[in-house]
Structures are given as structure tokens and as C-alpha cells.
Amino acid sequence: MCYSSPTVRSAQATFTTHDSRLTPHDSRHTHNSQLTHSQFTTHISHTHNSQLTTHNSQLTMIHLAIISSSVRTGRNSHRVALYFQNYLTENKLATVEIIDLHQYQFPLFDERLRLQPNPSPELLDYAARVTKADGIIIVTPEYNGGYPASLKNAVDVLYKEWYRKPIAISTVSDGIFGGTQVITGLQWSLWKIRAWTVPAMFPVPKVQEAFDANGVPADKAAVDKRAAAFVSELLWCVEAVKRMA
Image (cartoon, rainbow, N blue to C red; front, side):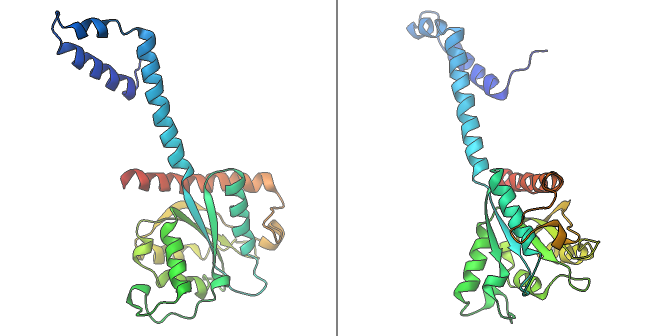
């Protein structure tokens, strides 16, 4: 069976409809009948390539934000945030920025942003960066079986900014379990505010051995392979949201 693409079928239908409106004595009929197969193919190729160019330019516009959750002195989870920034940039998968909660040093919020009469410039900047991002990677350590208060504070101060936002979660620990006890509680909080948590995990056990201070993995090939699957799920969800918008 010979398959013709939607672009070809559409163009063929356009030419056929146009010709069917012409009478045998219409001078335009002669012109259209002289349209060669080569000219037709060139037209289709140009149209198809234009669509591909537009599609690819949309893909390159994907912007991801990485939330580095820990505000502790001597934190190790930030190494994983640096890794993802490097991985996404080196592979040209998206533009990327790190939203570092340690740099913000937020106070404990007593109300959500939308109800604050005079929100700080730092809080407004944080909200704008979350809103701008097409998707988010949250890198969080596990502290005593839970995620840090700094992350809970930063999640709960926003609401509409999280709506249908694709979010992938990477959990980190200095032990052997890779922070996996964090995932359920954090996912539940994100579900309640109607974020879209990606069905992929990236646990990092013994982070102090797995990455150096600059985010360079000890076993780059193995880590990159895991990251490819993890990031692919996030990008798929981002693309799905864009198509449904």
C-alpha cells in the first residue's frame, strides 16, 4: 500500500478541487494541466520542510527550571541540580536555569502569594520563573524520611503557577535508598495543587560518592543513560501540554 502524508493529501485535494471548478474552455485549465510532477513535488517538499522547521523551532523553545531544594550549609543534593543543568545544556535538549532556594533564603510564609498585600521582589521573581518554565525538575534531599521544609514552603506559597505544570522529581540521599521515602509525600502535595508529576524517578543514593561538587558524575555513561529516560518522560509531558493548549 502506498502511503501519502497528510501534507500531500491536503495539497492534492486543493489542486483537484481547484481544477474541477474550471471549464474545458477556461484558459486557466491549460495552465494547471501543465503543472509538472516535478513542480508539484517541489511545492510539497517546500511546504513539508517549512512545517518541520516550525516544529523544530518550537522544540528548541522548551525551557526547563531545576529547583534545588536544600538550603543547608554543605548540601550535597545541589550537585544533582548542577548535573541536570549540564546534561540538558550539553545535549541541547532545552534551555535551562536553576531555581536555587538557598539563594532566595525565603522566610516561613504566613500566606500564599496571591493573598499577600506586599509580596517581596524575591517572591515575585521566584513565581515568575516557575510560571515561565515549560517543565520543572525538583531535586530534593531526604531528611529524616521527608523532604525539607524549604521545599514545602516554596511549593505551598504558589498555587495557580503549578496548574498542569509537568514536574519530574529526583530524590537524593547520602545513604543507600536514594531518598525514595520522599517521593510519595511530595507527589501527594503536588497532586493536590494540580501539578502534573511525571511517571519517572531519578533516585540518587550515596550522592557524595556519585557526583563531585560541580555535578560531574563518577560514572557518566551510566548516569547519562538513566537521565535520558528520566528527561525524555518530562519532555514528552511538556510537548503534550503544548499540543493541548
